[in-house]
Image (cartoon, rainbow, N blue to C red; front, side):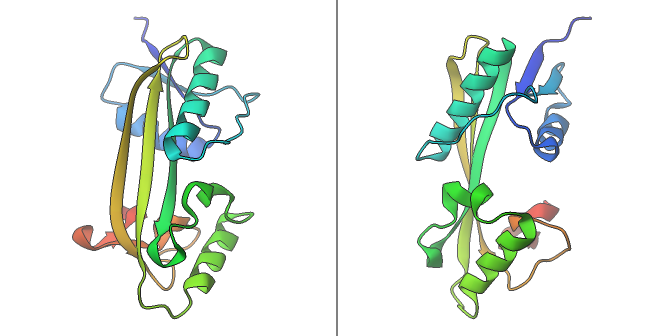
Amino acid sequence: MNLPILTIASGNLRKVSEISEMLNVLSLKVMKQPESLKVEETGSTYFENALLKAKAASLATKTWTLADDSGLEVDYLDGRPGIYSARYAKNNEEKLTKLLSELSEIPYRSAKFISCMVLCDPEGNLVKDSTGICWGEILKKPKYPNGEFESIFWVKEANCVYGEL
């Protein structure tokens, strides 16, 4: 049986794996974008960045393509790191250290994760987009080791950090 192909417009293997797991109930062959594809995220919104990635990957692969852009917006920091979350520091450990030091002893730690997903057809045309928001607050230290922002983002309604969801 020839399954339809869906390309995930990301070089991040963890992200491709997570999205693939969510889609495993569908009859699809899920692949990651070509190693050689590099897309500069020059958009000023999550939607613009996701669309840049989806269009580029769909045109390169001639397949349906799903892309996302997401970020953590901290109220006290006027929405930073926001669309620059991935480039906030050199690595995950430095990102956490930087964010936690910027908040230091600030009691007001509300934040939100925003994620925008975009689906393009094999010709690079936008077919569908969706944006989701998860509200929470920043813990004073990570809930588990080797995590990213999701290890310090507490979701009260779920009684756990985002990464545990």
